[in-house]
Length: 365
Image 1 (cartoon, rainbow, N blue to C red):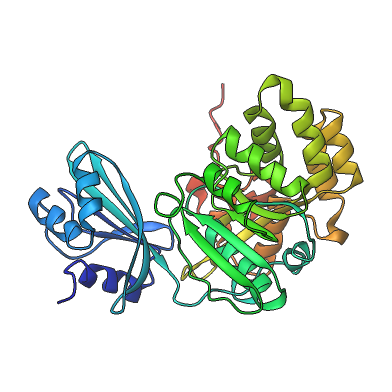
Image 2 (tube, one colour):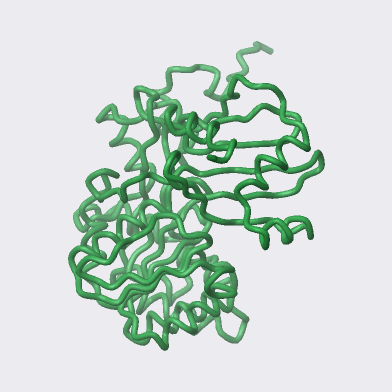
């Protein structure tokens, strides 16, 4: 008999939701094109929601949850497909969020990513970072990268994820996927083990702490291609985050590493499409060249945006440049682009909702 929660997950997927939320005292909600919409259903009681969740947890997970731990796992059922799930406790009781995973691993073309993103994968070593806030599609972009490598290279690819979202079947490459908490105790331990497993490519689902960042640097320095994510919004903040994570005695080494072995930073946001029917990934792209390398070494990281802006011919672009082009191609909602833009003055003339614009005080004194 299928789990009862499947009915809500199925409805969410049919509606095109990115996430389905469950919370005590509220009906289930689905996130459509960035906004939460309630499902027509009664408010969930504590007992009802716990029963729905317990049906899909293993006995070990049930005990962990009773002990107060959050549970991250992948839930897959033939009826509803695959979801990334997080079960948690909150002030009013139990809560759960399910992220819908597409049944097919998307390609670069499906995601409409710039051609330069494929070129990054021609490198045989170094660090490629995909950054952005939670829910901006970093895992999907990385899945497309791994799928391209899997189809076009004869590599040993090891992924470390928490949890595993897209499942890759080996094609030209051997793809080994390991889940933190199930197959390895942490990203750091998984990385340390991976270096003994003859890898060509290592995917680190999240560079969470100093130890993991340091180990990823070691992997990139010793001849491996490392893909990873950070919760930063642009290239400058990404570089600052890595340097700030290092102890004072290692900051100079970190800058030297970034100058030599950082290949690229892709920072992405999801912007509502012009017709409001989906969200489009809009990217800031920094490619490490001699100019950027020199700025890193000379403590002038704040000047990097000017280099990105003036090197469009090699594929670099600032977020605002990409947003402006997307508006001109009528690919994104100009109001949503304005909300996410850095220099909002550039976007004021495109705004259709006057309430978004700063109010001008017209009072005469």
